[in-house]
Image (cartoon, rainbow, N blue to C red; front, side, top):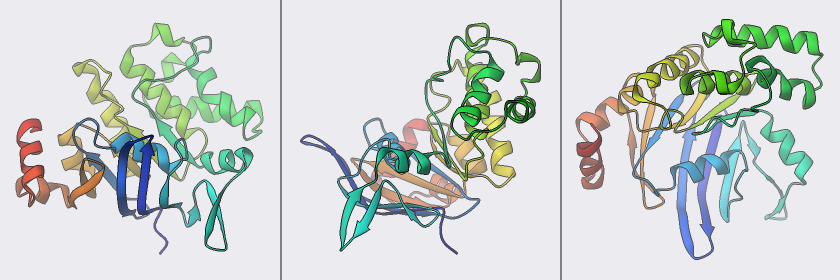
Length: 253
């Protein structure tokens, strides 16, 4: 079966700074892959490459068997026109560290905006689906609240509902709890656990090792732009094979 995500020797540089140095991995349909590692290891950059928010300098990335951001002709890659790249991106939901909600729209308004404007969904249908999604993330009673009236955890749950409103085949989470107060982290992780249980394919950059242990099918440890070690999260956490992994886990667990 075609993997949902396939990365082949992905490299990314910003000028002279080599951030990704040949990342290769696969994520099967319905799998949850958690990526951990120190700041600056390339985790978030890799996630942004998966939906072509960043262009790769070398290698190839596929989502559901389709080359991301490029067409290949004669062995050479040609970047897709912006419209085609945007079409690909519609199928990939992304939740960022900071919530990026529209401050002038209600929670429901934030959720229905993209389906109506991007996919052309009828307003009545989008609103009904939006209310259902807010209920799924435990915010049915906050549909008319504006972001400034919501806690950080509530805003992040709205952001998850907004991503789900586009019916993505893949969800990317870039440290979704790192900007939250500690007591608000659990409510966001609970929504993510529920998504995983429903079979959503997820790539999660996180520092929440308990979540990775409990929910992830595979754990990847990155450092210096490469994958140092990967495998079953429980095995890796209890018996890491690489000295660098041992040193990292000793500080975060």
